[in-house]
Image (cartoon, rainbow, N blue to C red; front, side):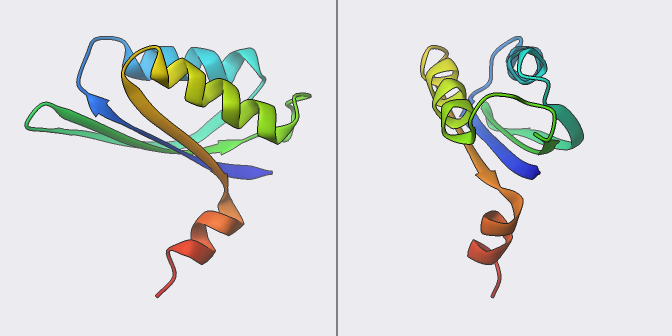
Length: 89
């Protein structure tokens, strides 16, 4: 299953490495990534594949949110189909 991960917060060293490490621990593959920094604010959107993860989706979401909180970041993860439906005009 494909999902969208969004990360927002103040720019700091190691954001991409930290998020990717958390995903790799759960056997989640990064398919695409886009990130930018604007006036010190970091934003990243990732398309990931969760098919190999054995962890329930709700637990993955909670774990990423907790990881983000510990670093002053807001991290959300949604299934791709729900993300697309929410952003369709």
